[in-house]
Length: 343
Image (tube, rainbow, N blue to C red; front, side, top):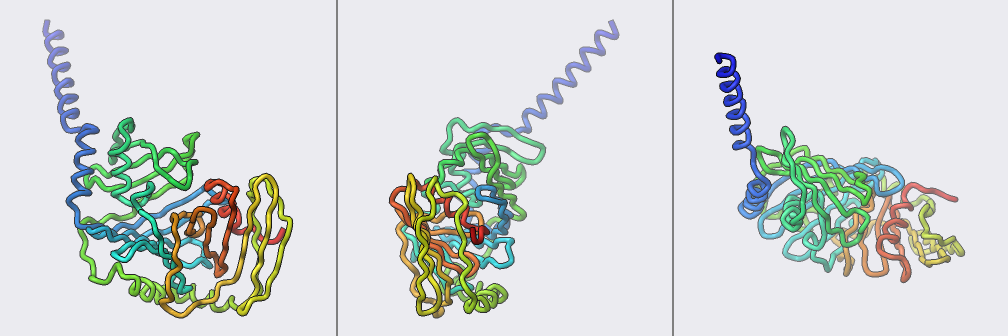
């Protein structure tokens, strides 16, 4: 009889422990409500992260600094781990959306709804928006994080349909994001190293003038590298992925400041690739207008319009044009150009 009583007491105590633990664990609805409240009430944030991408021929790594200020102001600085690549800034302010390469005095101005028009794995609001939008999102919790698995919304790349988002249990801010392909392979990973809510900002932190001039001062090494290569011959790079096309013609044209190379590829789908060494323009030159999207190629950021993609890599300007390639194929061709020298 005493043993039976002891077993009952033990069972009740164990049940109480389980119930107490369950009461302390947040439900999916609780977490979503807190995430939504965070993004609605915050005045801004500053975050640092490392992003790795396996969407091209080889893995690329970026160091990212993300600033957001209430009122739709964004500043995202991307620094590739490759020493020869210039840092780039995605900037959104009251004048529009820009992609800046300060070391080259180069800028694009976009007619786009960025960042609302597509999933952004390093922006807090975008991650929360994807969680709220996906009514079938899977949810679980680990020791330190709440984890959601949701659908994505990448307008320019349908090959990344899913993502796994980790939110820190104590702060409800993102700690890790994995973007997955159709086979659940992780192709993009963003590891957040720090996240500061409601920080202070200077009045001019989101102006184009400060970001073009201030970042260029920080990029003295990159700028010197670009200037030192201006007199060098253009090293022509070729795409590994060509969507079944083959190079039919290669024209070299001597321009005022150097050589421009135009390559024509023909096959099931035709396209043209133009390469020309960039020469630094006068400071604060007028941004080049683009009606299209911002696309991260893994080694640089590109400007993509309906039939054209433009980007700069290692001091060389690239233009890819085609009326026949799909948007996904355009991105694949552009990604495969990096690092591939003469055939």
